[in-house]
Image 1 (cartoon, rainbow, N blue to C red):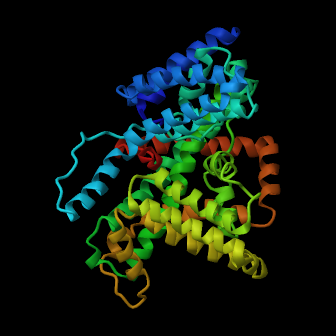
Image 2 (image 1 turned 180 degrees about the vertical axis):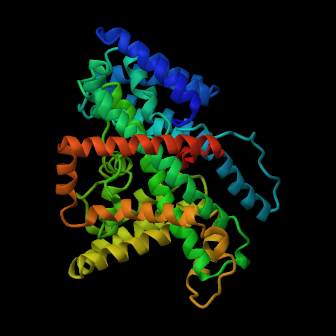
Length: 472
């Protein structure tokens, strides 16, 4: 169920909000309204996976009690819980990938292939797994207490605004709010709804339009592509993935706010970054902070010798690439980012700091765009072909008029403006002044309302396109 589908907008969400408002004066009923709604939401999307998650939630809850109350067995219980959750992730996300690669080795050795049943990838399995692991580790580190009861833990796992594609919320970040059962403050409904509308507009009007250009070029016969074709395709995807994913985050944060939950921001104008290090502080913030807290620090963090720090950093991003997708081009994308992060710590960060800020941003954006080529490609072979084409300025283009349509160019211009305008001097001050003025808020809300009408009309006219991060 997509957030901008009529079923969600005109049936599911109004019914849940009405029930929530009716129960608002009593904490218990509010929590049950959200829990039942969240379970129904996920059952609609992934009915066969829900029992698996419920079973692992039972083990998480039981092991969390052991971790929190039995110091002697705490570490063993935490490790067991992590292994169980990772096993579910591996089975559902990586079993087919592992079997395919094993069969290549077996074929090379002249042995018969291994056959396993095709396993469908449940939406949100990666996000759910990371959050469930954070629950166990947070209790072990004494950053939080075990959930007071099983329904509260279920609400943490299944809370529907952030369920399918994040932000990845660590248990200690949501613990106090879960105990308050979504105690919405005055103004939360209006503020959250405005943020939700912004996400709907970004997804339907901009990201979905950009996807047409990116898909057209990346699905084309590579022999028909020229230098400009390939770079246009990469640019379309570069802005598509940012607008698409940040749109989901806007919707999730807005929906949660309407029910009294404050989720952390997931993006902070990443394309104005002046280094890859800064880019990863601004892009998918919840994922980067999860990797730092639950992977990089346990590997030694900054407490180990320099060569270990570099190796650990590269390993973290190698695994981050694999987390994004069970394919070698995702692994290569993770390794690519890891290499540049290591290079920045060796010398590149000092070099970028000595050049003008605009040039540093341009260099970082170029590196990021090249990396997105690996991410969007369907294989390492296609990625390699695109890199070859992108490195030949004299290679003529053949079909630019097909994908360089006015709507696509307009969407690209708007996406670029949304990405880079925050870097302009005085932007934050002007933004706060507009938001503080009643006339400014009225103008913004009016513009959002008009954009929402246009976005819904476009969504109804076009085929529904799921969010990009539903694949991961």
